[in-house]
Length: 478
Image (cartoon, rainbow, N blue to C red; front, side, top):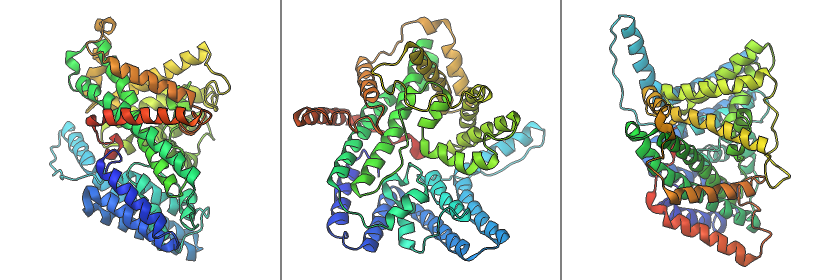
């Protein structure tokens, strides 16, 4: 079920009414209803894969209970590895089986040893990468004694399958989200209004920005041989805005929807395209995944401790794994490697934590130096996005070679004026709201009600006007 669909527009009010007016007097019943509602939400796409979520839930709940009763380190490690192997085994089979098979065959063929294998027609379950990492965070935290294992199976099932963030995150930590299922929720009007405001902005990002960019991105990337270098640059820039509007829009809708039900999810994006270097970008982009890899992979590897060689190794591992997490294609691995290469100079010069606060935090405008840094960071990020969007490495290289030609200085063949206006409007609102958790959080709160309402209606009109370009969310494929 898509957030930007009529189905969800009907589904959400029904769930909201039952949740607050029928099940609100009994916490266990309320949690049980959330499990049912979440399974309906996920099963709307393909009910067969509900068994995977249920199995993962049973395994990690059981492992948590076993860890609670076991003090022997070796046995605790066995339980932990059962969880890791089970979860990553499912993820590896559904997401990477054909990738490894194809590369295995190609490697042996290249060495002169013909090998045959049978590829499987495997449907990738939507959201498997997200809920797999979410359940793993629970098991690992219990193993590390950072979290007490739950005895409430219904609460744990609700945590794993919580429908607003089930399919594309944020990837919540058990330490943050799970305890919220133990506490009675009371409807909070202010929190609900704030949630609706964030949903509104998320829909604008998705429907107005991302989906309109997607129209031209698809045309340019699918026919890149026919266009000038300047048009290809425009296509890459449009994709940068498409993936940001698409993914951060989903996160905004998920976080806002959660607030309607009395839950607080972590911030997943913090205005990343205003970053002044790649390190700041990765502190602001897909925060739930970046911090997950930091806490469960980067730090255990040694993090920033040890020699410079070890630090460089750790950075490459974290970015390559992050790239591979996104998809079974060498394009994602190269995308990860490029970001590692961007990051290494900052690490070697100890400049990777220069920009912690948002740019021009206490000013209306950035300095010229800050603008140049933002443009440079956006430029190298957009270059890497070409590999993320391309269907193959060859496609990406052809696209980049097409940019590096004299036609780079020609007037672009595609010049959608209305989209340029929308992007400028979008950037202005994002800039004005950059110190908040999302752009509209407090942006118009100081104005009188008629002004606020007029602006919100204007956003809604734009959403309805451009809804004809409905596209699925990009991160559904991950």
